[in-house]
Length: 337
Image (cartoon, rainbow, N blue to C red; front, side):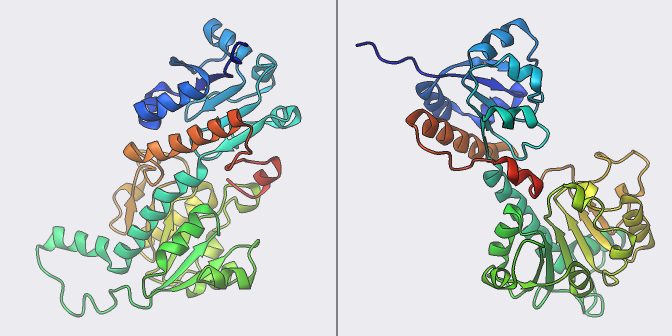
């Protein structure tokens, strides 16, 4: 009796990411589990070669650079059973037609949360030591700080405000535990008891902003969080406070934040902005109280392999008839990124 044909899988992403997501050992596992052409990486679903592959595909392995899976794409993929996303959010990738079809969706967002939390921890520790201010002063004066200059420097007892018990937020809370911090949390979906179990005190957002030395944003980019830190809420942060954003720039009123930073009242560590990137003339590029990075907190370089590992394991589960571990459900999108 002939062996059953393996299911057909197709890559759909910017091919530049493929070697880091799926180095040879992972690629070998993919091609063993499914009928997959490693040389075919779709960026345009209307291309004749892509259209033929799409018509036979049961699984799409997507990533950064994948076109949106709109009704037209799905109509051309009548056999499609699952989308396995080797990146984070699927919000801009999938639409209502996909959910109506009952196509399963999986995302490597859990693995992508790890480096973001690690980046944030590093920035919290550096901010507590007032590293960026001392660096600027040292570059300008070539002199060491006096005891008066460092009187308010240090990480013992710092109050860290975490906005959002997302995957990143929860991992950050774990990473903060070994340090002598007082951790505050705001999340409308978390109870006081759950926050305590996570090692934090649950507070309303305004109270968290008032009482934190360092505020870190980890809420999802959804309509309810659009510009959640407006001028009024930014004004609640104490003088000299630090705001860290590794989530999305849309969560902050950018003009109001710029005003606060130009005044020198606040410090900011921004891996994301609105718009992204900022215009060339933005004062945030040159302000000494702003540490700006080009959206690097998420998975880069050798960290991408962790995303590929999740996709490989999910594909193997599907082929074996085992439920997905990292499934994204339609109802999740109302409260996650």
